[in-house]
Image 1 (cartoon, rainbow, N blue to C red):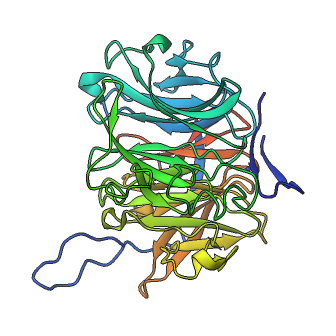
Image 2 (cartoon, one colour):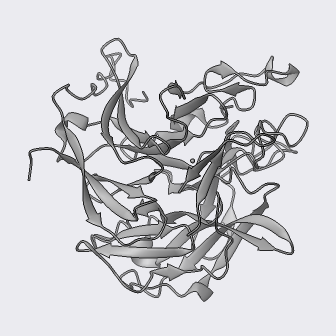
Length: 406
């Protein structure tokens, strides 16, 4: 079994084995509605297993097709379907023979086209070695029909590749925004301290590494760059860039109620961060490698004139937490105390928390449940807004559930 790793150091590695408010509307000058509060102290949450027998599950997605299916990404290159609490025997997609898997490489992310019900297009993020180089592949696949339970791997059309100088910090997430565009998270290229290039890849606008990308896809194997991308008219920048200054945005999501982008950006030695970016904040510099969370890291000359969008929350490693796993804003109905809260966790400790603002506008983190050390690899959201976790080591997909309810 391959093991996903999140490196914190490189020359003297500490390997963490992974088995590592924007409120719209101004109403004639009236104030925005208050944010949802943190959960009540009496709320008790547990994890209820939904399916087991999966191998290194990393990501959970649903197709928006009213089928009730959950699609689970396995690191080694397969996507499995959970339907009626059963894992279907035949993979939905199997590209295991085409990818490099292990450590932080593999099949890392999945997104369904907003019009999947009619066009059958899905998008994946994976690593492979071609011509002796490790590369990230962003590819489109076509299902014969939206209802099909298998996708032919030969339907692949590659949109683009990115050379990876190291095997770690590949990012991995994919998500469609309310604008219909595809967002892609890429890490800084690996090593430690964003060591490649004069100012590091994350601060370098000429490379896609260390960035959140935003592209337009039309289910024909090609992409275009939206003309309102922040660096579209920049002669030297990679025009796909939406945000820069990211270290390793392994898991991120878009809250379709607000359009806000939520990112769990994995830290280096000391701090993990949660970013919340509104649709109007495209082009923001998220800070890395000048900063790690809200703290200065390698604050060289280029950093002194830069403007940063700080995370809304960061946390240190003193309690055994070491690798943030980004999640989702809760919009389900089964756990009313979590309404509007952001749910996220940490792989190393296994802890799952909610994050919400109190009456003073401060972001408050509340412990909910523990998924187990070295086990929490990703979250998923079904069509009803209920949340699930991918448990990497145990091969289980479980659902967040309020204790004492059916």
